[in-house]
Picture (tube, rainbow over the protein chains, first blue to last red):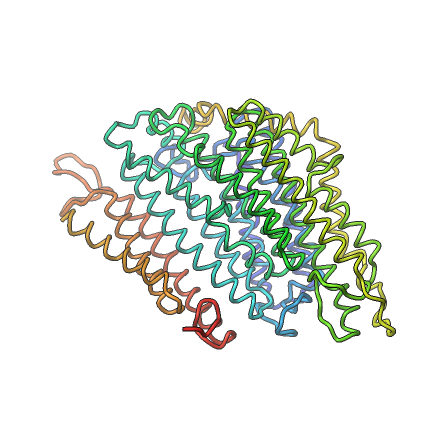
Length: 527
Length: 109
């Protein structure tokens, strides 16, 4: 048994506990420890990726109880891919947070400045959030998926509220209540499945679902669609997306950046469950989700971009772009073909990194504009209104330009590659005209939205105030911009290494569409 | 007994959903609690209802009751308990910071 499989869950758990014990220490050692632990997780995820890259499926039976009775962790290509994306994203979000947001005196537009709410717990919650994310990607058991969802949600509740402020509290309340209701639905779905099949192991469920008796077909379909509803809530699919813009636009920037992966947990769960349990071999319940998923995903893409067009400030726009990226991602997954899923898995890290970069950049722009705006008594932030020229406008503008190209999916960067793969995969689909038309229209809308915000933020500026308030060095300081550069560099890396990455995600898609191997690895004899 | 349990779960869920849709935080918290009670009962009933049966399989016993849903429900109760405590604290914080107990922070009604 390979202990590497459980290490990505244990490392953040231990780090979280240690950080909790050390909470009275000075902030700098804690920052360093937290960062080192995240780097450790990158190493572990990369090691796991190498171990499963050849197509092996690693199964870790907790307590060495054999599969259908005990709880298993399963690492396949998809899990390792998600783990690596999470760990890399977390590193940059944490680097940005270490600029001072982690002590609770957030620099963004909080209306209770100087309040040190949650001091000392940011890093603890951050690590526990990572534990929940890693666990959700690794578990092979439906009830454990619920438990890890709760772990990551509970940590995220604390992170959303971190820093304090009225708007944050209101957005946080909605977010928490909605997710608690979602958790209840999740449990009802899990309970129904257990009542029908007497198992919650996903591989075992796949086997029994294929042999479901006609009189149980109705409840099985109901449970499957209920699960889909819960995952759609986490992924912010069309009717269930309303919680996202407020929560993401109001929380602190590094937390919003980390949350770029949270919607993808829902997308991951939809992909995992629809290929494994409700896959092609599932008899009467096969292809349960796809007929719903495709139209909803396309509508989500449209709504997200309309929201981005109507947004009043940059953070809100970035939040709506996250919704749009979920739409593109799930459109790709809904194609249910190897090419479609591969396109989605290529698009996924791109959308996560660029979403995070936009949140961080919006925060920098807000800080910079506030410094200029404060001189005329206007706390303008990243609202789309004319303001005095911000400090470091050229550098921030250049970064925004590159981010906009990436986010809108223009050539030559990774957004374009992802969109191209998606469109090519859509050609084989019977509804190709709709998919291609809406995705291309989405690209156009995204471009218009970002061009509008870019020109409002950078071109329509008032003359600079007579009193230059501060040295510009504080705003365009390299340590603050480093995470943004890093995230954009990752996207460029995705473009340059598109060949090998596409080979990997294609192999992942093949593996997902042959659930037999997964089932065999989990149930077929002990490792 | 099945009908009684089903009715109980149904009534709890109805009350929970109704209260969840109210505009003030206190009914919302109560609604979440009702909903989690309903879910716990539902999970429990999914192991089939049996009276006076041991939770282990053995020779010479009339039958057995499934112990796994009980373990599941215990986990769900613990998580639900922690979540309720958290959401109550959050509601109090919102009451203090927003100046009223409406979920949108607007003192309409």
